[in-house]
Image (cartoon, rainbow, N blue to C red; front, side, top):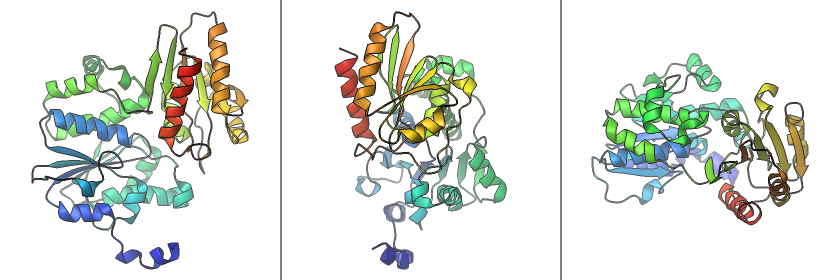
Length: 354
């Protein structure tokens, strides 16, 4: 079947192509990147909705684009697009494109990091000179691609930091981590371009709760915080959160991805201990052994059992964080990251909340 598809690839159009062909006049904001796509798309959707815009959330999050109904000329689409979708698209183009970040991922599918980067940048390559591309110039792979080629749309770089006064106005702990601050930078840039009402914007950001299994705080007390970050499927998606926390029990394990690297130094890991689970433990031990303490376990249930005993026996008053951020695909034991996240919550309820 794959040979047939390859030989007929010029005749194949994707759902994004058909969607674009039927909604050419509508404004489209499309988000891609390795980490943070769904969260950024959800924030933008909620912000636009609160700005009284007829907005639809489609793509990898929300509805499949071809199922949207009652579309008018004023309807705006917020689209989450993966490298897979972009790679095969022929007609699709976006008025505003966002490339959040790029780190090695899906190399089993794309083969090389160069092909993966090219798939992401197809979003910008398809744009015209009247369109806008918002990018993170601090990201290594994004910067290198921009240096190697000229693109037609206007390239807009996000700021290096967010005004601290603005963060205080939002007063939302969800935006305390580096990863979520990065997502917020893109939202603020779109808000500035589209001239959003500031008071409404702040109100929306204040109440944003995040998405399930994405840096989700499922338990919090004076002595303990538990975060379910089952969506973390690469080391890069865990690192920004790890760097923002102290005294961490880091639960990691699963089906490792080709070419994935753990970019953490020993000085970042003084107060982190890894709890490795699953059959792929040797991969993680090799990555972790020189930078932090660790233990390894047969499965996730064994980890939670051990942690429940440690917490109950720990008389120390220092606040601790249990971070479930597997940094891997879930397919060794679970159908998807949602099933993995749900199972983690079930174990927490049984062994720790009890």
